[in-house]
Image (tube, rainbow, N blue to C red; front, top):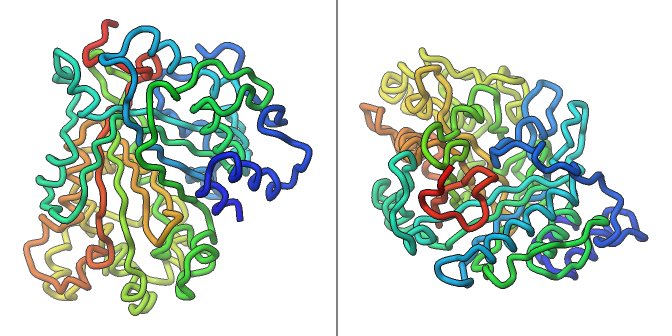
Length: 422
């Protein structure tokens, strides 16, 4: 399977992907995929500007690429980084942008991501090597501070210096991009590789996964996962009203205006007790006790573009806890919505390859927004007790790892200093 080949990675995984994808004559060096623009200045300065280049479902909701990888990186280059290192690293990223179109290439009717999407971020540990510190316009707590704030004493803090998140509809494109980044290809999709990360970064962790309708039921050893579910807990998560806009998560001021912050976590799902609840019970725990199972549908498909969450449902959370002895995950998250009644974080998470769970990559203007959302998920606005198994999905989700990063605008994505001059 292509998912397994992406998880294996390397030249062997890339060869297996090419075989599975059905073009025996294609090589990663030659390639036949649409390439990026000749003038890279036409690309957005926001790394996180993905929406325009994502597939949309029949309701208009954005759909993430099927194949995903998160590379956690340790910096091993000259310390502090010099201009030679920055030039090489930026050249590596520009190679990918020339070699592959951005996602769908902007085709609004596309049903496949025949290109590549990627972002790069840097952690508090990376920036700690510099003086001065990050500007006040960037709020970037360490992962240890996040875990402490949330009381997650059993989770691990990941202190990699940087992260690269790669996404494509084709496993061969994702793996070819990774191989090119680390100097293992001289050409990629007909484009000469210029610059690599090889002398400047080592991969400390490599996390792969997938996204898409019916994928979890095929991958995981659980006969209870609905056949059409895009995520292992059985329901879709990306409705128009449950995701922040790209403008909402963009840093507005300071040298990193146009960037955002990343929170990268690994979550495990305990599916056996989750699926001991019937469909109605799962709907009430995932959405709210006010949601009718028939209105939601088997995997949330009947809700189309809107999750059905209202201010009235938010106001009923304590009443539902007392009278119905259950509160919904989505219902609790309503208490973190902003003045426009929209969530302040933009989720870019995907199913984990190795076991049921999520690689949860969220983008937000300020890490405080993520903390607000997680505290709402923990039920800080519920003024009544409910049994653990009825408290949204908390009982079925375990956080194992968290990391925090600044995602600079494209103009500063190559080994940035904390306060670049605009």
